[in-house]
Image 1: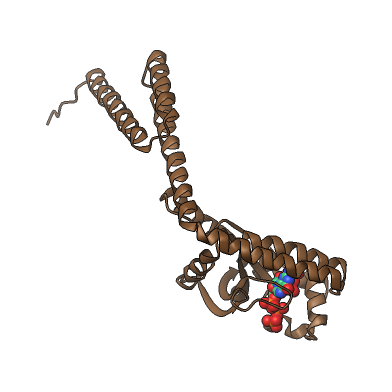
Image 2 (image 1 turned 180 degrees about the vertical axis):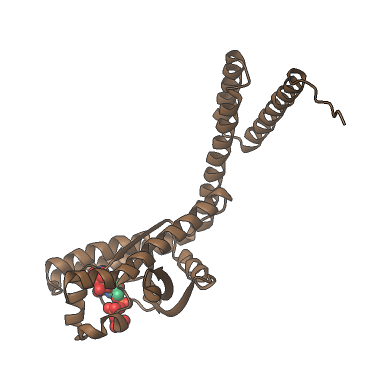
Length: 280
Ligand code: 0O2
């Protein structure tokens, strides 16, 4: 198989990865704009490198012709979340989508691997449109907490360093580290609702501040410099208090000021424009 064919084979996987990363990122943004807690912390994706594909084929004794049929992680997405509970929410979210069909779920959180690896893998079938037509490709979505990801990244590097033959004293440490991550995850879960409340409030505050600054900016063309200065000073005072209700009231006042300027502009325009008469 030469390089050109590889590119052709991997192209649909590349498209699938890009599209899914984009869609999940947009979803994250929607949660933010709605002021809702988002179970997704970070999304990334990759197409397996050719050397990594060849290694795996060799390791699993898969003939190259069966590669596309037997390898389900050529396209890989990683979704990182904060809490173990978020993993299930993300799985449900994937299951509810119409643009991907869940084929298998491997739950290595309930059934941790002997290495200590924990994650939930969801294999989905995803349709991509290429010049050659529509192609359905498998995509492996790995869902894990930040703690699980930290462990898996370190362990993966060690696997690479020791060519998948990690010495006993190192693997013993890794097992201990995996236990510590599991404890950390469950401790964090215990304060999940408090952390979620805090994060949603801070998101709402940021969103409100953005709206206010946008409204002040819009006034630049209509109001005098002195007035803008006064509004800005008032805003800083309200902002200092970090009180959402006060910020909302301030936003309403700004809306009224903007509305006043709009009405004024319309009546001035009407006054300047010559009256049109129907001569028929
Ligand atoms: P890479 O380099 O990350 O791509 P199976 O279902 O067991 O027949 P498969 O495909 O190995 O076959 O499935 P599995 O076990 O669900 O693993 C797929 C991927 O999960 C791996 O891909 C890793 O990314 C990750 N993974 C699984 N087990 C471990 C583990 O013990 N440690 C770490 N760090 N990651 C793991 P690759 O191709 O092995 O590696």
